[in-house]
Image 1 (cartoon, rainbow, N blue to C red):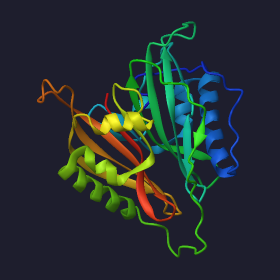
Image 2 (image 1 turned 90 degrees about the vertical axis):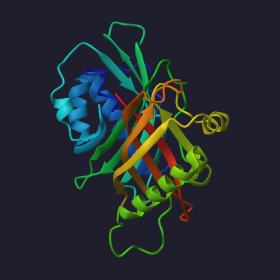
Image 3 (image 1 turned 120 degrees about the horizontal axis):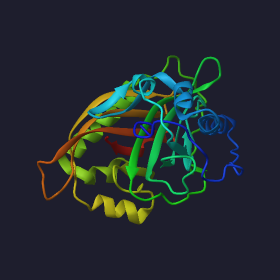
Length: 291
């Protein structure tokens, strides 16, 4: 959760005047909701903004894995810290009611400070409510020691399109759970090699302590690195009403150092699955975070 370490108000340290405009009106509405989230954090406080835009059952990162609800935010004491984030990549289901945003965040000890002291990346799932508003239903953040590269906001090169045949009943989250179970089985047998079969060409990988992995060279290096995850346990999933975009989350153990395999920490893992070209489920966001 991008809020977990950062506590109160936010200010814009990157330019906000040149927001991208997307042809997909639903995608634009979702991104506009994220921008409004940032704006409220600036003009009021981070706590106020998070309490307003996060759903009551939002999934975030806790000290022992994922947590549900806003209790941690409600109980946070105020301080003079300063948080800002921006969208670098986004995508939306063909139903236009469910999508995700991801990008960098920065934290300063006070709004007078020129330099940030903590950097990270956020990963959020948004869902359109019955009243037309958007709520953030998953908010998982990672930290890294240096700022992420300033990416121009973009969306997928493979947008999801509505099927001509309308589904008779809402899609079952079990669709996503089954995909995740297949991946976990392959991961148990093959380790990082499992990604070769399940990862999208657009996959974005985030791990605590390192910059987001987004380029082909970075992904190749990651897949050739040591596997530091074990004991992955799936908890739950959610899916768009169109059944072509969804998420899963669970717990994992992270080995903090290859020199000390017994030094492990409990973590939250989070993935977004997308049914690309209405044919194959692929992982587009893959995150492991811990406090």
